[in-house]
Image (cartoon, rainbow, N blue to C red; front, side, top):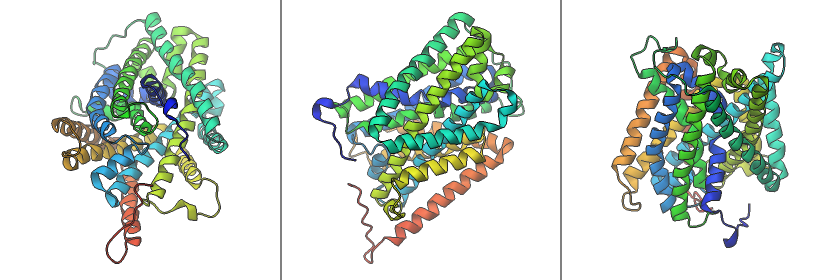
Length: 443
């Protein structure tokens, strides 16, 4: 797509923060609240604070990368700078891509879970069908072009962010602050060593913040990118932390932990009912529908653009060879998201997404620490701390999934192995006799 952003039409810092916050405060928060409570009990509001601390260390690498190499390539640009063109960059870029597709599926499933609250319980089995319909709608909107996407995203982002913020603040005013004791131990973690469930839950809390990585894609469209990209990331994370914690406290004040766990796929709507009455529940469902609608459109757009970029960079096979399909990257992205929506429930979708994202995140920090000390000015200890935190969270999460739901680990492992093998085979296939791989990294 031709860049038509003129010098006078660049994003301001406030505009960048608005876009970043709109992406971050997405549909995932509507379903992750209950999933985190299922692991940590009444400590789940604290889990969002701890998650923000981990993300704070993690964001340091992205800030330094963005300040040094601002571009529309975002994470892919950072990986290519660290590891150069080849299998490593391709593998971790695809993990980022898959984590985005998983997010689409999570958003679509959330749409189904909340929309079904408007219908009798006999329709409970139709959540996946509603999710598929949303993904098909997102495909149609994306095909219509950037103007339709932009107008839709701006309008719905305002409703989403303002609505969730007002819901959180109003909930706190009406219900007051919840009594957080840490005495409630969920069944999922009662047999585990103390604190392990909390550390594992941070994987899901981090997933609620991971949208900040999309801000790195604004490098070609923001004023003073060498400074404002980093500032935008920091302020967006701070704003989201305030809203998430306020929302978690409001939910904890409106429902008991067993009630939150029972209604984990639609916990916010369930919490709004006793606090605001039937109208509160309907308003929450309406906000969730708007949030999921806008979230899946934006996610489909970003993920398909990333796949197309990887194709142009020759990190994956050329998509132009797939018949005469219009926008094959978009078709493939939506089809994969539909498959995940059909095959897995929301808990498994979120778990797979968290695993893929954390592995990619570790690669970002290691790439900065190991390969770019001469090119980027940074404090080496901070990426190392981020790596240690990521490994700790990922290890605890993998252990809990091994005990409670090993299928998640099997699916994630198969996905990673397939990515590594296919990337390696593809790289070998377009290496010339002299060992050179014309990658087209500047395309």
